[in-house]
Image (tube, rainbow, N blue to C red; front, side, top):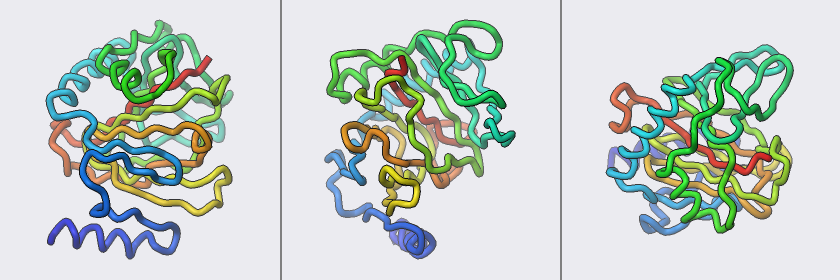
Length: 228
């Protein structure tokens, strides 16, 4: 009953701006269609999540998390790093993919545990060349945006959630299109492809400290892309 009360409160809070997907409609593990985005609940079990988290700590040691500045001069609330041939970066000069992180070194290789998810779920025969790793601390969010800095939008975007729940919102091709939302839980995987590849999407908020995968709380989002 406590969980149902929380969901009901969220529905009241957000109903004026977008509709919510009922968390109790879907059998656990079955794919969920959210405005064209396909969500696979509980794709990674706890052991797989823990192993991937260890791999991502190695990535962060090689290329530390940074809090980037947008071209407009605003600090992003998430902290970011990357792996692969290129990583996504931003500063006053614009949004772009770069072959080196801002400390001057090459990005580390994409961990095998992360590539395994792409190969199992993406439906394509090419590996990604970019793996973005975002850390959401308390109060962090990601406003509605399109993933459009890649050279070819034919390739899907695969997103892995680890840690605290994040409220994932998906809309259409125009920012003002109607949206729907769903809580992404630790181990969930989302895929944006086909007509939904350029859909506006974002994370409205997280339930900081609710999960126990990250000892200090927070959410990690791992996003795999073919950027070049």
